[in-house]
Image (tube, rainbow, N blue to C red):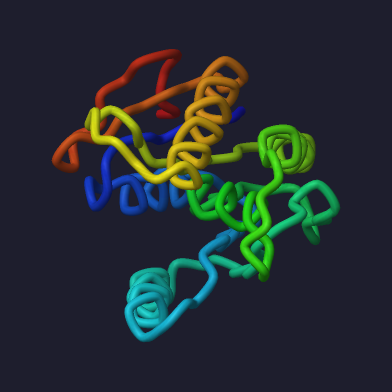
Length: 174
């Protein structure tokens, strides 16, 4: 089963995703795609680690190439988050851009094949109508294509608004 959680920044996606993981038996993996850039990024990562303490997660920090990741055993995985993974796959260390869509989708497909339950978190971007520099515009479009493809593949799609899950497709596990 694959569950896609989407929504704006800081709307409760991570908390809700973790709660769905805790409902499942077996191994729990937290797949962290956020690279720790600067003090703000490091603080955010530290906050997420603290929130997961004692919940039985095995954390795997990996910033790219999820297609070659082999999980230790079947179980439940929470991929946090597609927005970070997309940026990591799209821009290399020098700032060169490549199209990340197929790479990101192949990684999610590979994870799904290894999981009883895969929970994928992404951000809703691009609906603000603002103009962006060309690199940011390319990122927003790529993430939109990835999100649409993931929503089509997912068994369940849920949008989080102010911490409230709004079911868009499928059903949530009981």
